[in-house]
Structures are given as structure tokens and as C-alpha cells.
Image 1 (spheres, helix red, strand yellow):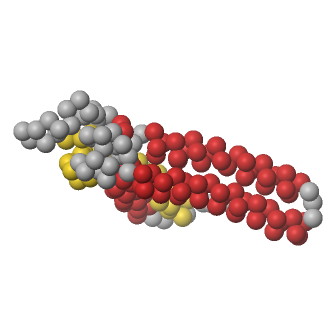
Image 2: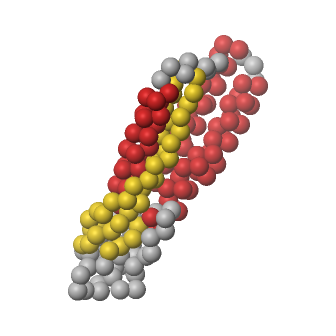
Image 3: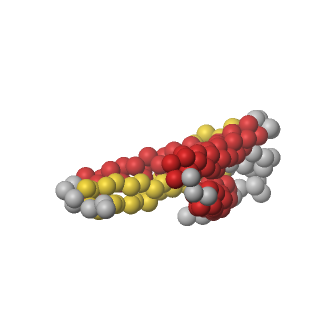
Length: 172
């Protein structure tokens, strides 16, 4: 049993980043909102302030990383397309999360089965592996993919309207 306190913090940051489109050659800037979650532990309640600070620091780092990840898969302000290579990399990493987790659960179940030799082990770990797919999809992947466009606000260049009609309003 864990004795202590766990701190969780959600942080957000906004950054102006350079945007480049490999499809149409667009170069511009965008304001991107990043969101991150951080956790810190205080075993036996001995470091409450340190745990809170670690939680905040991790959340801020995760938010900064989220800005960069969002920049990679955001739509172009001019043509509305995404960078195909970055999108493929995004989905490859998400697939590895899912299938790596399933493989680990089935491997763990097989190891336990080798000691117990009870068929219920496969039923338990197989069911958990199947439930792992929607859990990861609906808690992580869905949020990362479907919130991208709402967290990107393309900045219109001075004196020009090459992005006219394509500017997305920034949702906070």
C-alpha cells in the first residue's frame, strides 16, 4: 500500500512557432496552445512542496512538447493539408503504443501462466489487453488528433492575405 500523496498538475502554454508546408511551400507563423499533465509523488508525506513542484515542472515540459507535436501535424493555413510524413509518424507511434501494450500484457499473462498453468490467466490478461485498446484510444490518441486544429491559430502576414478565409480562430 502506498503511503503518501500524489500531486497532479495540468499546465498549458502558448507559443508562436514557424509553420512550413511541404505540400504548397507556405511559410508563416502560428500561435499554438500546448497542454500537458505532470505528476509528482511525496512518499510518507515528507516532500509535499517538492512533489508539487515536480508535478508542475513535468506538466510544463509536457505542454512545451505538446506544442511541438501539434506543430508537426497541424494543417497548412494556405492549402489545408497536413505533412504526410509527420502524420504517418504520428499514427505509427500511436500504433506502437497500442500494440506494444497489448504485447506486454499478453507476455506477462504467458509468464504467469507458465507458473500457474491455469487457463483463467489467459482469459484475464486477454480481456485486459482487448480493453486496453479503447482505453488508450479514448484517453490519449483521440485527444491528440482531434484537438490539433482547435489549438492552432495561424497568424496572417502583415500586408498580405495569403491565408484569407483559412484563418482558424484559437479556442482556449
